[in-house]
Amino acid sequence: MPHTLRVFCRKSEAPTPGEVLSALTTAKLPAQVAPEADIVLTDPTWEQIALGLPTDGGALVVDRDVKGRGSIVEDEVREFLRSLEAVPRSKARERVIGHLRGTKQMFALQVPTASIGPTGWAIAHAVMRYLVSRCDGLMHAEGEGFYRGNDLILELA
Image 1: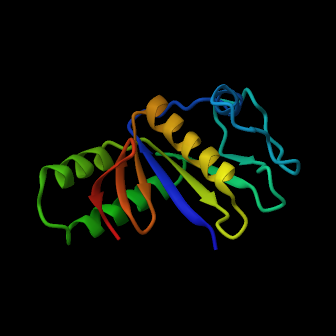
Image 2 (image 1 turned 90 degrees about the vertical axis):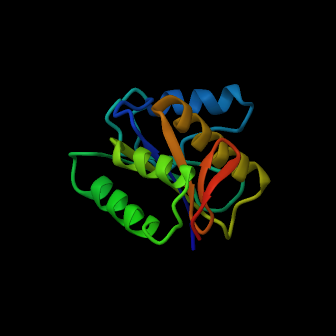
């Protein structure tokens, strides 16, 4: 079963798949499109990138949803806002709520935990950090909570 990492972004523009790959190459990580993926590297309106891993396991799949292109972003934000109602009030909680309410697009990375090694995890974290920085994002790790950089700012198990 894959582990899900999400980035909730306040900017609606996204880097192209080629720019994501370039960022991984710059970070000296083995970046490649999964062999079975049909991706246009210059497409600014992409919806999915499948990144091949340096193992025989599954690909890292990055899904992109933009507000107004269906209801996925609104549904996810609504679900997270609902779950935050049970969290005690704090500055961090209010910052997360404000960020979620301003979300214009969302990225979800499906990490194949059964077949991923340390390099695969490094690629996954590099993709998330890059999307956070490029798109004014806030990261959420399933079963953990919301992160600013490497710091857990609000636990949400």
